[in-house]
Image (tube, rainbow, N blue to C red; front, side, top):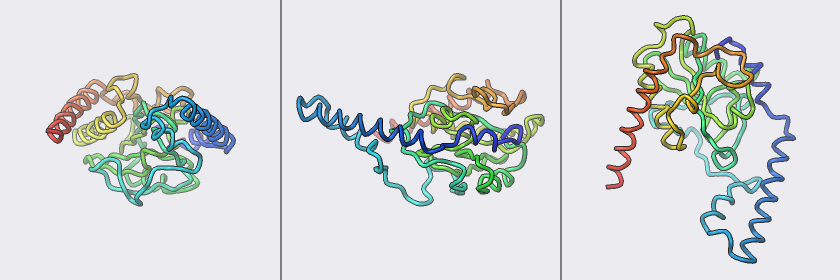
Length: 240
């Protein structure tokens, strides 16, 4: 949340409807062209058509109410006014994780993200003891970055605490958040570096300062890389 001014950032990230209509028209044009190409020359393979199918306006992936993308998270739904329904990564590629700090408590973060007048929410909130809540599906676009393009391409993670209190960034919080970010990066193919794992302050046009000067980026990325390697080993063992 940073400066406590999420509502301004949300306005920059919210839709007026016209952009969505333009995207649907573009997707429909792409699909029509793809269908002609397939019919005349078999240009598109079956799996390519399968991917394009999800971009037909009005078609979306199946959803289960209360389902989480991260197995360790508790589902706590944000107000539908604070995010936009999407079908990522089919309509928008996800290539960023954005780190936020609440400027308050975990309970405050959940309260404001459930308030429809707030007009902003992150996908996840991490408590000081490491507990994780998921408020928005990663399929969907959260209003958290204050920049529409970055909202569409990112997953936002909020952290309990204040930017000027380094003691708020506890070991359990760092470790839990790092496991979450590693899981997101592995599932979406996001590189673990400072180009793709960034702070809210680094979003173009953002007027927020979080996660602030006391967030230990070296420590955090080291933890994310370690967690990602362990997840990769687990995945390989599961395939064996």
